[in-house]
Image (cartoon, rainbow, N blue to C red; front, top):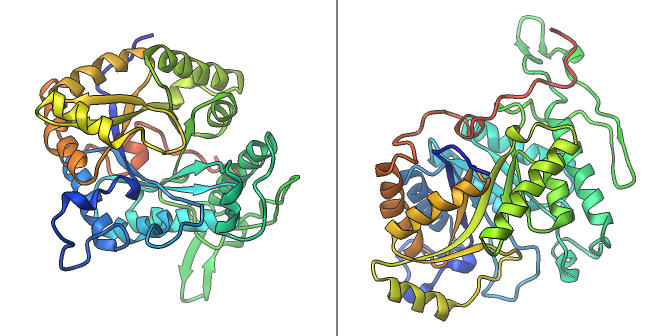
Length: 373
């Protein structure tokens, strides 16, 4: 299976990849993963490199100090007004969040960013994750994936519960909204009962982008039914090709056009001008403990560009790069790799759309509750 170039490019930012030993001392403003300045700096760097979007990793396991993490959605809300082009996609668990609250958070993020928001919908599988929010245990499989599908469905319905022109804001008649254009979703299921409507107007994108990591049959099925962007987790070329084909086949079986999905392969990257140094650093750091497999690469930015071009022929429409070390590998991606890809004409030279859906070539969905033609 081949894929036409150019391809999409994203990066995952995970505070676990930060290596304080690389910095002689903390910056005066406290530029560490527990400060907003750290995330503003990293995401602005990704935007400077012209990446389509960043995903912000989250952690729902209770971590002993000083290994805590900031909430991914809150990070996104802080950074969004300080960027202009790049998509911002925080991770949040369907297992440990309520769909009504999450829908308003992501909708608000879309408003704040001017239409650049997304949501990486994670499914928590570790028994200890429940300690993040309370005593509720992680549901057994396959319940947690059925729950995730309902959670995403509720969130999407709430985004549509306001029609685009529901707001009137007519001071002369004291009418803020047209009640005929604000809808109850009346969702009833085994996991949630949500009447709606949302308390937030429909987001600028209509539906912010939903991304899901597809690492095994249950997550591939979930992604094929519910995602706009599928992050394909694979350990080698053959597994990548099979995984991409499996997601496309599952989407078609669910009545979706596979062309409406964007499949991006996850790649762990360690970059250096000296290939041997990159290999040594990857061996020193060990495998990334990020909950899902990924293609691995250690070498120069130029050789990574060539490898991505080859991988792009295996059925994916782009890549999400996972830097082994921050800020070191992110700088190599945004300053060297993107220049290599642009020179080889497999990446655009500038941002060509104002929304994340636009950057990904995804259309703006119609509102499911609208009765007007």
